[in-house]
Image 1 (cartoon, rainbow, N blue to C red):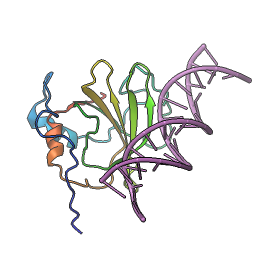
Image 2: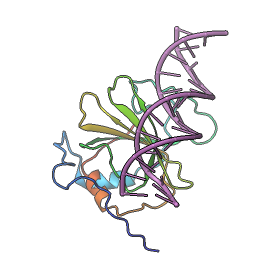
Image 3: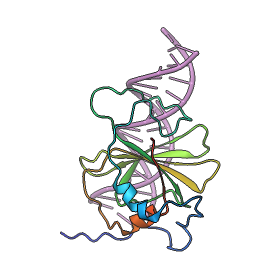
Length: 158
DNA sequence: CGCGTTTGACCGGCGC
DNA sequence: GCGCCGGTCAAACGCG
């Protein structure tokens, strides 16, 4: 029953996740901010990035999926947030020389999707977009997650 | 052996 | 009506 989840962090605890901080958020609000993320209905037309012009404009029946964008500064694009993701596609995006990776939660009933994109101007910056909410507990300790959170800048699409 | 990853092709929607 | 773009699924392969 107690599954032993081993660390999936492929990088040493030394320089990888160090953020030079362009204005680090208050540590007292770091982890709490994320946990406080609620499925607030975002207005249709609301976009995390309005530089591409998302064509997903529907706003009809059913509640819309909450979308959150995170900008993380990391050398690796494989940021493990505690859940298991399965890559289901990769597509190149205009305005970005780097391709965007599409991930999906491998959990049954958990149709949470995640998109990871790297900025062309700053390859050290990785933008992760979460869509949907997890309906299951994390598969591994959150300790490291909090650690990363303290180094993440949370962007609220408000 | 299992599953996670990779690449290509296909489909839908929107724009013009 | 056609073209273009983005997004998703599927099959195959590799690795653990």
